[in-house]
Amino acid sequence: MPFSKQYRIAPSLLSADFARLGEEVVNVVEAGADWIHLDVMDNHYVPNLTMGPMVCAALRPHTQAPIDVHLMVEPVDSLIPQFAKAGANIISFHPEASRHVDRTLALIRDHGCKAGLVFNPATPLSWMDYVMDKLDLVLLMSVNPGFGGQAFIPATLQKLAQARKKIDTWMANGGHKIALEIDGGVKVDNIASIAEAGADTFVAGSAIFGQPDYKKVIDAMRAKLEYNVYT
Ligand code: DX5
Ligand code: ZN
Image (cartoon, rainbow, N blue to C red; front, side):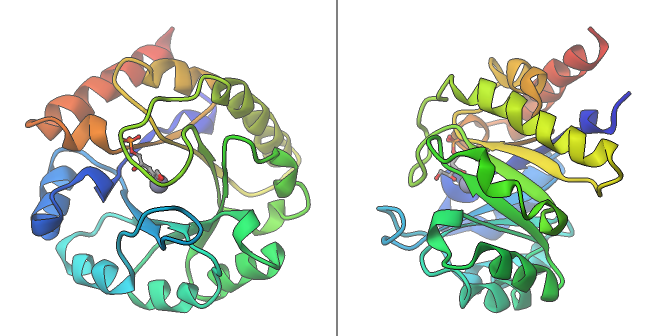
């Protein structure tokens, strides 16, 4: 089995109850979440405002699960040391929001975190070409960033396959492992085709937090993924 078939589910707290975030984290990890996805929005890079490093630090003691920080902010660099200090494990950012993408990636790793680049639906994958050595994660947006609960953009499937190919070629040539994450509109009904296209890590917000039984949704997602592996 190729190692790309090691799947992770990363619930996005964007659709969680903000008045009970610590409890939500504990519950969703108990329900089988692998990572906690934290959507950081600044009302500048995206037209919405969410949470900062203080919230990340407050959540950190509530779980051992990796905290996957998705920065939708501009500028990027000043927040990196703050999120690293707040206990983030993975930090990803949008290349359009940084003046010096290579430098920002290095900054994330220098602070002991895994580094990721995020691609909006219309952002070309070529942004990753000269920084593969500094990437631990590639995150493809399957919606426009800013809000939960939007519909999956179908053209992302083709883009995922192209990203998968780039990453597989990199790894086949002796490169380190790079995760391929998808974010936006992921549901039980489409997760198998998204995995088929090449994703190994799945962000899901409204699909999980919009239901009363988180475990039921995560189990149903895993069942679809297993089906994908063995067929
Ligand atoms: C959008 C965020 C996503 C979003 C996913 O800007 O990056 O993480 O919350 O939410 P759903 O799964 O509801 O599309
Ligand atoms: Zn996100």
